[in-house]
Image (tube, rainbow, N blue to C red; front, side, top):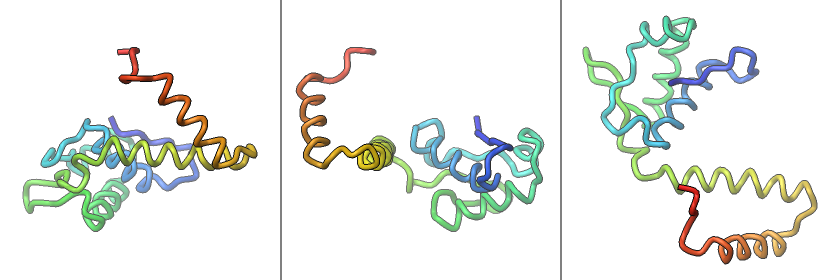
Amino acid sequence: MFQIDSASRVPIYEQLKTSVIQLALSGVLKPDDRLPPVRALALQLGINPNTVAKAYKMLETEGYTYSVTGKGSFISEKLSGQAPKQQITRKLGELIQSARSSGITEAQMHEMVTQLYANDKGGSSND
């Protein structure tokens, strides 16, 4: 469930934090869902429990989770209902950066988006 790439230059605690946020944004983890205990997750991922604890602490500090003494860490309401818009905004930002580096102008991007919307009236039919 949680994605960790040991070959990545991104610190493992940061990868774990990002993975929890992405799972919550995508609806896999819902508000008030309990995260796995620190030791259990560390064992499952083959990482140090202090690394998991650091990721959990960062998530709590940023308001993505909350902890209940003796019960564990839980997903907060902060991420509920934001998934589609945040994911699309992030992806659009990446596409815009790519378009700029490829020499595509803002006007050309607008034209492309307008054409795509026109060609996809009523949503995707790839269900």
